[in-house]
Amino acid sequence: MSSKISLSRYLVEQQRDKGHIPADLRLLLEVVARACKSISHAVNKGALGGVLGSAESENVQGEVQKKLDIIANEVLLEANEWGGHLAAMASEEMDSIYLVPNRYPQGEYLLLFDPLDGSSNIDVNVSIGTIFSVLKKPEDSQGVTEQDFLQPGNQQVAAGYCVYGPQTTLVLTVGDGVAMFTLDREQGSFVLTQENVQVPADTKEFAINMSNMRHWDEPVRRYIDECLQGKEGPRGKDFNMRWIASMVADVHRILTRGGVFMYPWDKREPHKAGKLRLLYEANPMSWLIEQAGGASTNGKQRILDLQPGQLHERVSVVLGSKNEVERVTQYHAKG
Ligand code: P6P
Image (cartoon, rainbow, N blue to C red; front, side, top):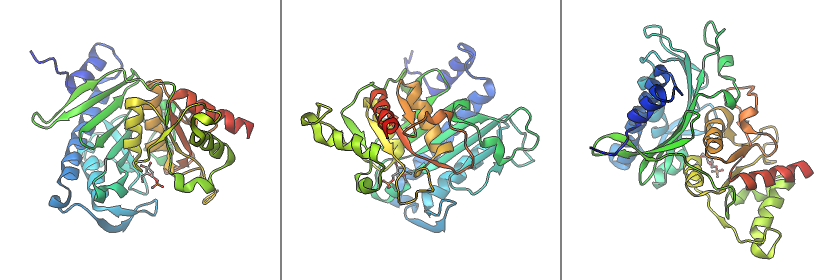
């Protein structure tokens, strides 16, 4: 008898034995996982699949789209539109929301995703990933509009990512802690490889793009300066630095061994709160980190409590080991 627990079995147990999720949400998550398998297959082909390079187009963010960005977006739309679990979807790659076509039944969930985060790493063979978040359609919603998506991250009913790296690993929370599933390519199924993931409260590793240092506000500069001073400085310990420039890969490392990830506001674009997107990057990652015992703020407030004003709204992010995130918050409070 195999002791392996598949994603399907984990989700059935979350639904049947723990009552954490209804059947429709279980089915939705199964579909998302299957879509991630397809994306993994396309990503792993690389140059052999003719999928590298630019698509010669721009997304709503004004970023040049990679061919794989568009492929991943289409895979997620096509996989999810017919199932009857969703009312609409929102994607980093699309200006406005995508309503489930009338030929299909409408469901009660809203699915948001960054179909392929870190795409600047695609052509250099560095880990990238899909980030997803699930919200419930508001009860009083007649026809779904963008407004229905503008819910704080504390309203999520499921969140996760799939990292396409040396392994393809799906990381998921439905509010009962964080579980990790590794893709068994021979079976074609995701197998539970870690449950009850915990982020250590302390760390000696920080992740930030140091080239932006001159643009940060003072509390962030102070925090990083103290890390760089090492054991001779006020922290009394040496720090290491990692920056993969792929949020999924950096967050996966933090969930696996701790650390603090920062993409703070900087003065190059003062009107923008930060670089990363609130609804389909920061919110799902923040819930995962909190479910694993970590913390996630915009430097001052808990990210999951922020009320979004726009679908593609950006936010500053400080997430990971609780004691480090709280230190940054204290520095902001002191100004
Ligand atoms: P920079 C990828 O483009 C992304 O959105 C995140 O995945 C990543 O953490 C960040 O941007 C990298 O930004 O400015 O270091 O290239």
